[in-house]
Image (cartoon, rainbow, N blue to C red; front, side, top):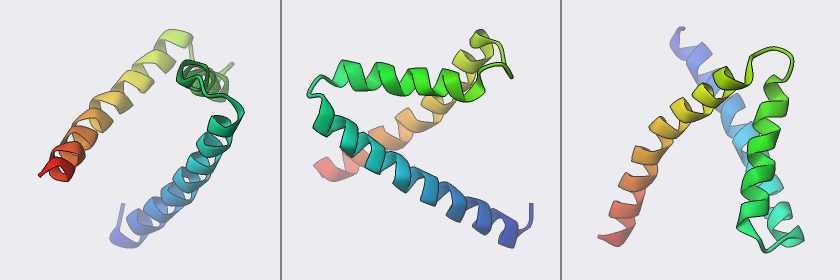
Length: 82
């Protein structure tokens, strides 16, 4: 992928991420229970891939994303604490 295509893909991702943050904010206003929101978001991921991938594969995709995001958020938390 060339630089322009990467930039366009990143911009598209940021738009979707922004929308996801708005959805989470709305969900927080509907329920104070974080577990309800967590399960709803995980269910949405399975629904996103429903009928195209087996559930175990969807779980592996989610785990792969978590393996990437956890170190990112750990580093961000360490930097905020400094």
